[in-house]
Amino acid sequence: MHISDISPHSDPFGQELLDLQHAAYAVEAELIGDDRIPPLHETLDALRAEPLTWLGAFDDDGGLLGAVAWEESPDEIDVNRLIVHPRAHRRGIGRALVEQVMARAAGRRVIVSTGRDNVPARSLYERLGFEARGELEVIPGLWIANYALTA
Image 1 (spheres, one colour):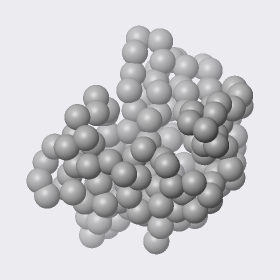
Image 2 (spheres, rainbow, N blue to C red; image 1 turned 90 degrees about the horizontal axis):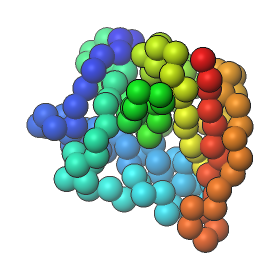
Image 3 (cartoon, one colour; image 1 turned 45 degrees about the vertical axis):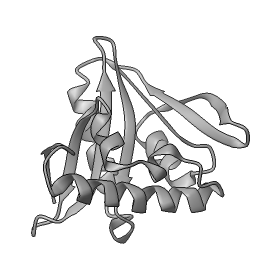
């Protein structure tokens, strides 16, 4: 596996990234029992409109296995998306992607949110040293868990 910078603006790569995102969030929707996760229903134009920086994880044949996207400020990095292809779960891809973002944080706080009932994602963040910072009902019945990692 290798990790490199990617962009949803290149064709046909943008569609491949969107398809991966939909597949990954479909798994989360099943885990949390709710399909109202906004990236699950996002269009390619909406994905491209997001002001995100992306990294992709690729297999040796160049296939996209996973990706992470974030927004950053001088004080903080906000991990906006972590997506791993369902066929590549439990292979350390999500961990490797988050570790790359952590390395780029350069002393800044890193925050992330995930579905409250997404036990695999919550376990990943906790194993990486993120601390739970509460839960929030973002729309009626849809809860997220917030995490932070301070330098």
